[in-house]
Image (tube, rainbow, N blue to C red; front, side):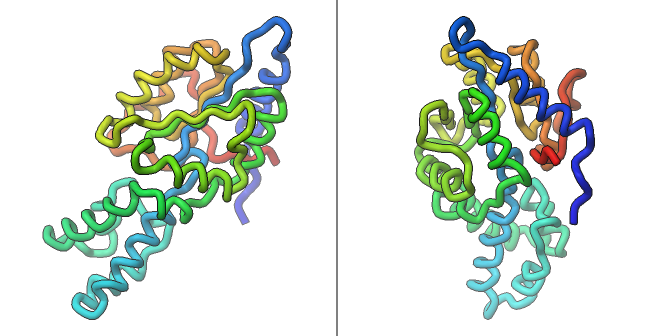
Length: 247
């Protein structure tokens, strides 16, 4: 059992709901709440683990030591970088790491494997609460349209998030090769077309800092899960929480 959420987390999440509910639809622009997906609404470590378990099964007869090492992994020890995850179980030979990485990359950024992602605790309920309070929900993700759109929609649907109804928008990268931060730097200003950004949730401090710079009146919230190695510190005013539980 996890300990209950900290009072600070409950306060931040409730403040977002209160701000949304305070908007007068007759006189004000639509309130918007923006959510990243990977490591924000979804824990994608189970996706990586599934891929690595399949790799272990394929190579087990030829490379039993590699398969045995991979079999010791759990979602909790999957790092942001695949190379760090492999190093943690003693897999460091360059050719092996290269082969596993290619196998992982071909599957991780593809529709079929997103069904293994797990919702971050409280996520579906909280997004529904924001939507019910009157917010337009915007899923803004570094996933790409060509390779990941159908899988993303299915994953949201199957995990209980609102999707396919009025007041739900989705913004994905047009090109898989576009860096995530560069994509969000370009995409964030376009949100003004649709309404007033009330809150922004992301696991990357760099993206949170961009949102706070562009929307200083919004609540910018850092989901303290995984982040890219060497990430900057969050700016003053960015509020950290661990998940989306209100109780």
